[in-house]
Image 1 (cartoon, rainbow, N blue to C red):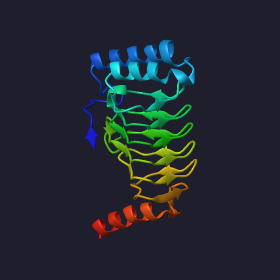
Image 2: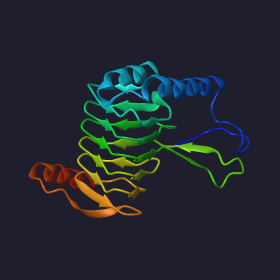
Image 3: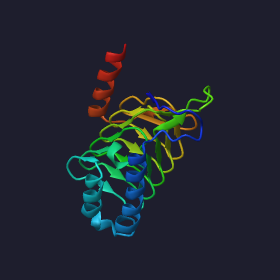
Image 4: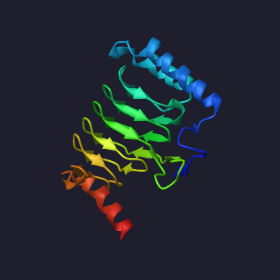
Amino acid sequence: MKIHSQTDPYDSPWSVSQRIKTLLWEYVWLLLCSWTPKPANSWRIIWLKLFGAKIYGVPFVHQRARIQIPWNLTLHNRACLGDRANVYSLGEVIIHEHATVAQEAYLCTGTHAFDQAAMNLITSPIVIGAHVFIGARAFIMPGVTISDYAIVGSCSVVTKDVAPNMIVAGNPARIISARKNSTLNHISSIYLTNEL
């Protein structure tokens, strides 16, 4: 968790150069990427890399996905950002291999220090594990880790970490069940043993 320096609620926590770079990124995505067809994924990945995103393998980013600050984003092989998925990457966002962030899901790394007069920006990283599926319009809060093979139901609000192999849903999200697969159950049992 990082508390950003601000003197009042109207003071930007970002430097002038950061604000210019972010503005430039918005126009680059709008003019060069947002209208491209789905098969032009490699073109969009090139622009993400040029703006500092860490890319491993071949992830997929939909042309209507929204990425606030690309240099805070890490995408691994076959990670997927769906149609209108919103990565509000004021802090770091890591999406591991074969994880899917479905349509209109929102990964939010920022909140505010509401007990401070300046309401300072607080950022905390979000980590999406391998083979995770985040359903449409789910909302992931700052500082949350969704562990490997977990599933987040559509329209869920995830306020705390999700263990491997768990299916969660609701507002706030709660465990519904575990995924039914012997390999996945083995991973989950290792995790639970280490936690105890």
